[in-house]
Length: 264
Image (cartoon, rainbow, N blue to C red):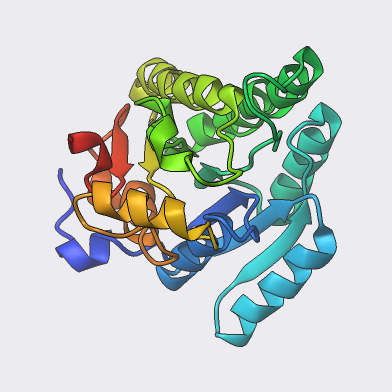
């Protein structure tokens, strides 16, 4: 029998345990963690710096939310295993997994090295696979779970080199590679585990406003239909929606939160 909850109640995450990788990070992580906490979830922020996570979790607790800091290096399989052990020991389950961690590598096509790509692969491929494999069995056991992977517009379309003219900004080629792969990996999880109660979806954000050079900002905002870059509040709604029962019949999709960038 279908739930008769009102629509706003379906967006509530009260009683849910949510883990956000890079959950205290300035690009997406903090916003995602805040949004889930505001919707009522108990939020675990996990990234390399336990100190930074602890400060952020305390900020959330001061606002009346339930937040817990944990340590994670997404490029280290043993770190993922320790995180799994810590989460299950403390909470006994996980309802929502948001993968927003990224193995950051700089440089462009002419300067990146095979070692750069191997480092990226340890986090953005092996790490993503490993953390999903760590928590999916628990979601299957409880018959419910939502995985949300944070991809990018550059997992769907190529970057426009003209945007970067007049700046020293580079678009690392590995980024397009791993973000595109993440989208199809999400579909794999959705199809493989859907009948066992686990949903998997992607969010592909547009460019995040972060003190970019004026020439880039002008060209980017002129091109995007909504006329601006993505801000801290813009990703929260999509994450809460995909984490909640409001999206109970949605899986295997890639939600574009890009101000219309990919509609052109």
